[in-house]
Image (cartoon, rainbow, N blue to C red; front, side, top):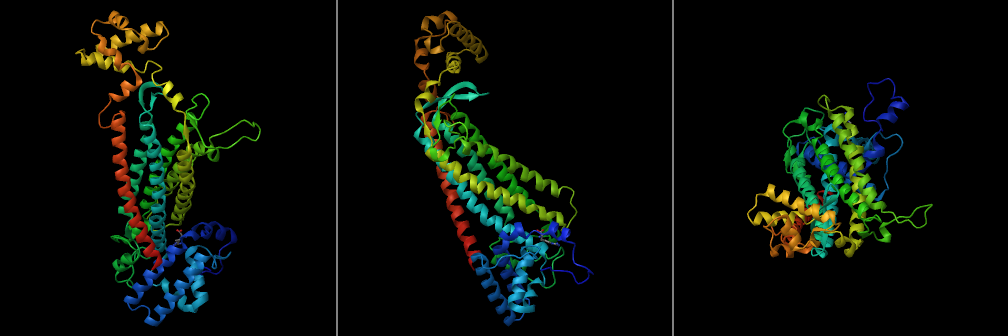
Length: 475
Ligand code: ARG
């Protein structure tokens, strides 16, 4: 059903209708559209625009339509342009002309922003819970391996020994920041645009603050022209999700590498591995690869919407309809990806011996030697030089620094003493880094419990938002 047409001599060409139709992708907004219609109906009732009797009829109509939409008993037809027109068709079909009363004081321009905000407030809460699950899975695995030494890399070259627990747990801190960004996003998204109508507000809607309250918003926007044009909340959400995708891609890359035969550090569980159609022996870490690959579309979605908005005139332009598919795709993508990655991590089996074997390869104890000299009073630049000579000596014998004797070290510099030798082990090196963010098992365990505490707070906040949204949608 078209919401306009009286002033036209013909209906739109089929190509135009097909081009502008959005109901195939915006139908998921239907429950939010009906929730905001209820709030708007109340506003019309308070302003005396609709009588109490009509208001009751409409309220019943909206409620039974909502039940039908949720149960799949009402769906759009081939002639519906978008979610808003499909739902109005239903109300008019069920209630007669009264069904068209809700259009007073409201436009699809403020309606679509309201719907999309409600949708995002709802779904991003669920997504945040999935992010939290992933962070917790990483911390749980990390905790098991706090005491296990591993080679730490820079430039993908052996750098210094680290706690393998710290290596696994590190991703959770990035995910914690993603959750924090979502909470911050919410703070700005929490203002209702309903009442802005086409662009200038409406004389028929007297108290948009009340509608905002009914819909669970914390207040209303201040400028109706800005409100119907603003898609910052979409872009910000897309950015947070693109960055989250980037974080997950780095987890994916790490697991792909760790699962390679060359590394052999992790065995991805059968349930999270795939085979090859031609090579019967293969076990491929496809979940990790998709975790890496999906980041492309998440970033693409952000760029797509930013590009649509650049230079766009105020207020509503049909270009703005292009905001939906990208954000829906980012949410759908992550809703599939997050549980799979969490499952892969939870079930992964780490090959401790292989991991620890390489912890001191590549002269990874060189920094211990240099730090030792610094503690003996040598300036670091000189210590760097002297240690370099010790590395050269070890390399010329094809052994590691830990295989040099005290005499060897003394031949390089007289400052070396017997107290150097106990420091030359991966365990010793790792244990000595006791600063708050350091790799010592004690530091790593303490950091894990701190982030666990913060995640628990975020989780309880998410639970409150979940409940609040359920109330808004259920009223
Ligand atoms: N389907 C449209 C969108 O998603 C709804 C708003 C249409 N407004 C208009 N003035 N044509 O943006």
